[in-house]
Image (tube, rainbow, N blue to C red):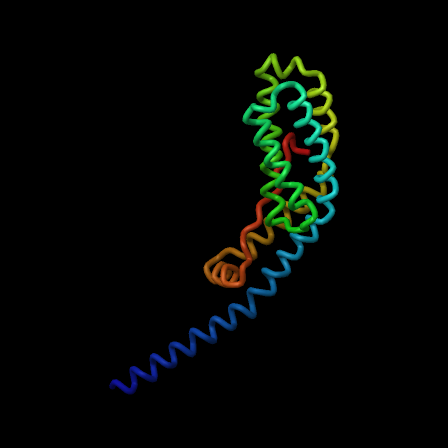
Length: 183
């Protein structure tokens, strides 16, 4: 009886190993291909985003020049722009997209502050810089293509077996790009 249990345990271990190998062979290529599509869809967005955030640096400079350097939104904008400059050439959407989304959220926050603050409204260079930023549109079909690739990647890496394989091989989640004003 004991010997039979030993053989059953060994057979179970072998079966689990075989199932793991089959899962890796079946799942990993599709997850890898989906991640590669995300990376390819990201590449054409980098230069327009970099130009957009250079215009955003002018917004920050207008805030500084208008005596708004100590405002939290200005300090947060300065820090986020610095982060973007550090990763702008990385070609890594896993790193760049969260920073881009943070910058876009800061723009939305600044626009709310602008509406609510007569002091900010009294700074014509700020409005000029913000108008220039708003003109720096990132190709909407390119953004949709990127976000669709992210959705496909997320589907390729979710599910019990798929998630185990994806997590084991470092296929982490990728966020979609969310532009302020839907640009």
